[in-house]
Image (cartoon, rainbow over all chains, first blue to last red; front, side, top):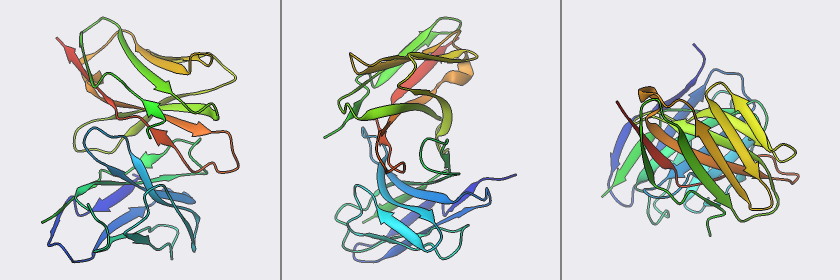
Length: 113
Length: 114
């Protein structure tokens, strides 16, 4: 079955540590995205990638970094510069742009203490 | 500044009745709208979309209505079923050269009572 796999489901880190969230897709989609969800707020775009070896900042990119070395993979690193890293992180992919339906992973809940 | 607003955080409806979810937007550049549904511990899934050239789109029990002059859209679910209990997100995409950005509302939690 095609889909998006995010791992791990839950992640705990100490403040000051960088942490990388994994996202893998086998849908052969060109575009991939990282969103953050906080209580009472909609999903906010962190980074997106239209194609391999290319990525663009979203609305809240500060304190995050990404890479897109393979079509299937789009890992997100939450750095120590991110002021409020505790959140629910969702990875998504689409064939082209957001007007084709986004396929989401099941998310990673990151807790930083 | 949230450009897509879902002012009702929750909605409770009896099984078999209609669920009406509302969404308002402020950016007049939005011309494509989508609804996503999310169950607990899962990622959102695409439900239905509508382009601004239409005022209604229907897919089975789900119908989305768009009122451009009021910058308002609504999702109707008829009849509501227990499996419809989920969080529903409204999202909007602007008319621009960048087709990779969506603005999401905060979501409405629907509970369908037996």
